[in-house]
Image (cartoon, rainbow, N blue to C red; front, top):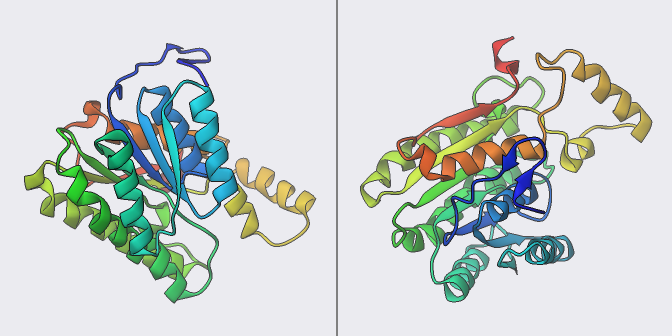
Length: 257
């Protein structure tokens, strides 16, 4: 990990002196976002249910020169999130940006709502009291295009993510007086291990299905975790100082079809 991105010159380190919390930072979108926050100069506090991978990410960031810590935490457990907030502030003295990206493959409506609605609500309760002390606080959720349009075959997931879009809009108004900006990033299908876990069949068959789907996408490629990370970090940056209550599509134009 360095301060330069291939082909784009030096990366702006506009998070110097700031602290980013990445919930669900051990893999996928969360891991990519933790890396990008660190590359932009932030000190990073990340959490996940996967302790081995989470610690490995924190060690990777530290090896690259960033300050980073890992806390084992379940987004569904308010006590875990309270401990995450406490450790973050105790270690770094502040909290400026919170990115919520915890997710896993679920099929039951109750499990979906607990993970994708109650979980973010738990994050709000645990993190907002500390965000109030930042001079530019932000709270960003990982939504989905399924929350912005119909998703045939996945009604419970679409229900949970639609609720998160509503939560984003309402919290943006409720927390505006405290200076906290609230947004969501809403990717279409992201090529991650979690996506592949939801697809049935042998690995080679799954690969062929993914390749076939690529040809039907407007930009002829899948959204990557890094694509979503760029959008999330932008929304948390001072460049987006007047953007709040937005659920930003990161879909390569798929919503236009």
